[in-house]
Length: 591
Image 1: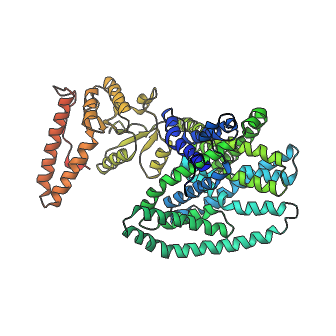
Image 2 (image 1 turned 90 degrees about the horizontal axis):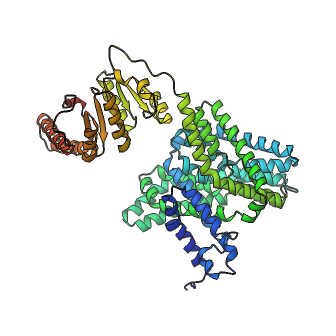
């Protein structure tokens, strides 16, 4: 049976797909964060936006969401899919290593923020139980927004994930605790104990059955070579795991995370991650639309001063507490500042806790509505807080890392490596192998800190800042290697260095022969195009694998490299040699 064209299902699908396929790319063109874009669209298409004009302009029916509650299951699916994708990126070993951060830092952050917020509510005249309910609800942070912004691999993402994971695990005990504090709610404590026991048994059974059944299940799906069947099996596993934990009284996101962890241990995790990514993105978009639709613009307009003060207070308290805990735990100032601001806004789970507290009579209906709007506003500004935190973190790290650079050894000049990603690290390893001193410079404080921990001679610095060239002692350097993956900046820096140091050896990374020719024109001693080098290495590998002697192969590769370099120099219109004599690199320096 087909639905009529004027049905709510058709119009809602039209709005959602229109937001995902047309509106959000338009926002991206103007560099507006997709998170903010979806929320703004939600505000526009919600009942307090264009929806209020539908009676007078029926054609707007196709540009609005007729029933915001109808899309809530899909919004919840977005959060479930997010936790599932996070599980795919993790492993049980990594999760076990994070246990201290999850149950130490995570517990301290949640309890600290909840207590301080509750004390603030008590100071403003709220009852103790009401203050506790509001404090716990607002202390939660958004898993759905924070993790896509921060990831789970960097220093900020790892700490944020540990705290968010504890909050997700604590959500069910929080709900039961609020139920126990409600009038006539004393029977909630036995129910909480039963849920924890049943939930623990359910998780144990999932771990046991998953390790046995999932590899066989996905192997059978892979044998069919049907992407549709593989996708169906993937979604089935996610939904069954979520339903199992929900039936046991736990949060469905716990089941999704466990499903992701179990699949991550199989050989099919990359295929599952790729095939389910579009569903995660679209479902998260629906969640963000629902956040925007929950904002009542008339209430915001009438009480904007109160709402602004309330949101500022919550964000300040959470940012300060989280930042201080991270500093006490040994995190750098920049990481503490960025993580604190990223975790400062309330969460989607705040709405769940507020609803539970209101249903139990702990919070009045008007109070709950007010803080629900504060929560929606907080979710809206989370990407902005992330950008502000990132900018402040870079400024703080720049100031804290401006210690004197290692002194130059007059007897043995060092090589300067500008940019210390994968290419720069490989250059450093080769210099170390040949006992050549070097100093690596990068503007990414996290990358510099991680490189130092691994034993590299790295220092924080931005080469384009005034005075940095003098601080680095470029005039006394034996050579400078430019490895940045920014063609414009590399060419500009090459021109600057060549103008100041006519006799300096400048070796620059290029993406292709065209950029290499531009670098030669800018004054580079040598420009190494990645596309050419990868082709030469492939040629060397296949010739040796075919049984040819290593010596003649290497000689032919070197000849070919010289021919290609000559052609690139011709492209650069270089009719004569630059100031420095160009030398062919020795065989043992080639990767």
